[in-house]
Length: 319
Image (cartoon, helix red, strand yellow):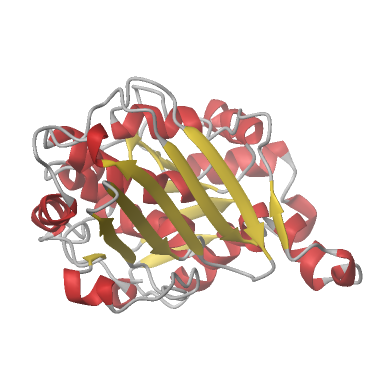
């Protein structure tokens, strides 16, 4: 029997990606609303209560409203907004953060999809803190550059519409140091203090390059870049979607290409080191519409509808 899926907000960048990737699957029946009823609360409520899994691709307040409309206790939810990512009653939908997380997602009623930027930051930092390599109270700064689709439809229209010539080639934002992803990073990475987070948009459609610079003095014991790399490789060894570059591969990289993982659901992690200066650079490259959004939602959906190996062997082929 096909699982009935309703995507609430299927016309946004993430919703369209999920809808496109699910439309060809014979194990899923998509419940859709005509354009004239997409914002009709009664129609949405009916769809939300007759599906098996609701995928919310909505702004935070609209996502909270959607959850409040669900009366059917059998309906399960994947929320792609940031509304529930630090809510202890929701399961954080990042299967690779712990060996038991895939099972927890498979059994959960409510799953919060990770944010795009936190996907890279948490992937790099959590194993180091859990492995007693990085101090949880270390004063961290995280830099990230995303393609303009990270702004949603507004970003796509601004860069691809009539006013595209007016867009700056590079924009750093969140200058008030209150970006909404910071609490999510702090909670799920296991940090004592909120990191300084400096996000930017580049004049390219999709892809993310995220970096975390460290002084070796922030690390415990005699940890080095090689030790960090080994911790990451051991943590993600069973997960096909996460690639940890070895010393030779990272040594051959003169620069980071934020679009290198585009059109995949892969997350590429690397460690760069200058021992003479006592510095290490942690990096993550991935598609903000893949592992950073739609790909992660589909991975969680696969787990919830019975694809128990999706957390271990998830890639583009399962979409």
